Length: 158
Image (tube, rainbow, N blue to C red; front, top):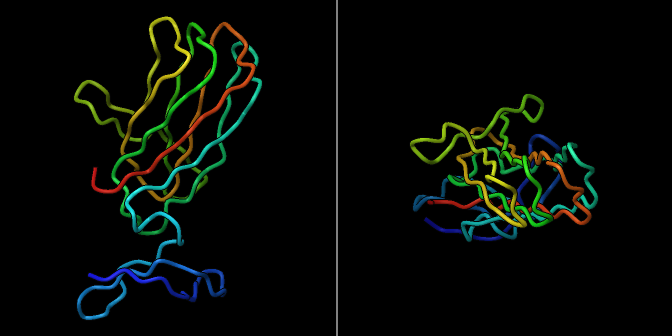
């Protein structure tokens, strides 16, 4: 397999895009990911919802993992104020409109969701992507989040 950077004509948009192009030994196209991460096996995003009132939720913008992405693990991180009854979920979508919880990675966790016992300044949630798109939904608890930061990483081969 070879990975090169080149210009890919996107048939969906009709535009030429700079992509990392992955080919098999015969030169056949395997995938064409946006330059800057997919070939290394990891992509990351940071979201800054900022202030989130008590009992309210914050949903990140969706991220496009690519049509035939190599990612097998999603990791979401929360950095903010410990808040009792807070929870975080990774959601995924096949079409970008219908959202469901991403699959859980532990035998006792069916979905990618976590609620710390009494809140935490920071915690993580892991899940498996089901589809092309992913996002984070954070449900705040009993304390105002004054400067909430949410991060999402997509990892290949994990």
